[in-house]
Image (tube, rainbow over all chains, first blue to last red; front, top):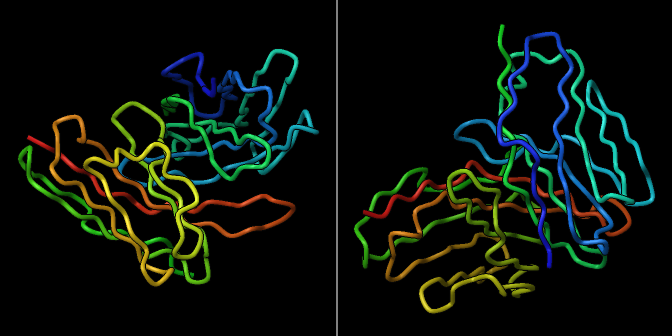
Length: 112
Length: 116
């Protein structure tokens, strides 16, 4: 069935370090993936996306990697800052649908 | 550009009472979504509207939840009667097609519902 999950519920890093947040998905028909950031008391905010025909996409300080062989998605944040502290969700979309299925989230804490 | 507006931001009710949430999407966004986010979990889609028509309501508990978007702009989500397990944040999102079947969803701040 459709499900998106995370390997770790929490991640704590030092300011300036790189962060890697992982996500496993099970629907091989998913063709589009998104990472969202959710700060306390706010709705999810789009960070970066990737289509299934790509294996890597870079943004400003963020990189998403997609491994379709093992159905794994990761978000890398370079030089992590205190403002990056939030819960990060991956979401997948099955081809031909607008419906997003979200994982449970990883709480990132950045220590000064 | 104004974002997705939701009200109220917080609501506390007793079980078996009724409650309604309101959402005003971003101007020009034809698609509107309601999600339920239980503490510690990712958002779960309840219902999706395209203009004033329902596209997907497969995960909406229709015995107690209802939603409408009569004029294709604002939307309301109602719960009647509420149960303890309905305690969650209710998120509204709207979307715009940006390219090739990709719809970027913008989320509102959510309404935190506590059922006691």
